[in-house]
Amino acid sequence: MPGETECGASEPASYPEGVTQTPVAPVSTGDEAESVVTTSGTVFPDEAPVLTELHLPHSGRSRGAAPRSRLAAYVALTKPRIIELLLVTTLPSMVLAARGLPDWLVAVATMVGGTLAAGSANALNCYFDRDIDAIMRRTGRRPLARHEVSPAGALVFGLILGAVSVAAIGVFTNWFAAGLTFAAIAFYVLVYTLLLKRRTSQNIVWGGLAGCMPVLIGWAAVSGGIAAAPFALFAVVFFWTPPHTWALATRYREDYARAGVPMLPVVATPRRVARDIAIYTWLTVAASLALWPLATGWLYGALALGAGAVLIVAAQRLYWQTTRGDQAKPMAFFHLSNSYLAFVFVAVAVDTFVR
Image (cartoon, rainbow, N blue to C red):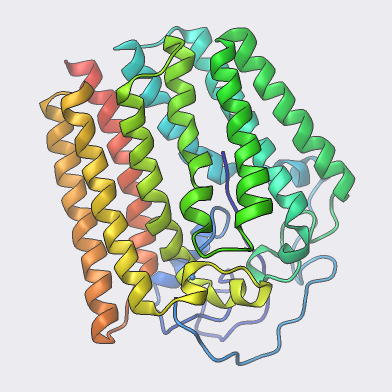
């Protein structure tokens, strides 16, 4: 149940001061403004720019960054903005499992427990990635990079959140859902953060499995088991995660390269990255349509088909721009993919209520 994020330093005058690294490629005004909004969530980069300045590891607080209270620093460890999207996928899964509104206590326990679980995974990720967070300009404002929280404090905080989340979901829903919650935290921290992230360009493909778990947890919390429908939703998030992440990583390629993290845009050509974004986008839409005959009606089918067509056009446009050498705009795709995922899952809930 994962995430990543931000920092500050001097930039060319034409870019907003919130932009946290030298742009990878010329970008339009508007696009930079959008990236300011995203620098508190996940991680992603493309083309190999020539470094125009020497970037040294951050030591202490980022220049010009206002000090946070101790409480705010601990909250920041959980990466709250990443949690929002995880919850957007959880509740519709519960609605679909219940064929309407789920029991309120189960719903509240699952959402609160899911928030704590995601916060636990993110805090532990910050603990283990504190060395590269201090190097990457995009993540230099994280609490550990700014020495606002001690490493031991972050570790204990993450472990406590995880234990409370598993216990809450187990006590107020069922222990099968609690087991899935524990597996999601463990997979994100042990498999993605410690094993895959720094070793393979496919890190986000397999590491992204943790981000798919909320749909299974939500379904299991309501039904006590698993069926085909939640696995279709699982597949939507699984195929959606790589293109979403690679689009953002394209913008921050320089940051990842500096930290030695082999995100696909760091090790592959822009054409290869754009091609893989398009392929996974087609797979995402296919997975969303697979849910139609399994558990939804015509309204969901129509909405998923329309949203999928928009996303595919955007992915293909990004590929064509890249292959022609035009100015590609991966951040436009990144923002659209965020909206797409939320739209599809809201469509699941709406379709359930109108049938």
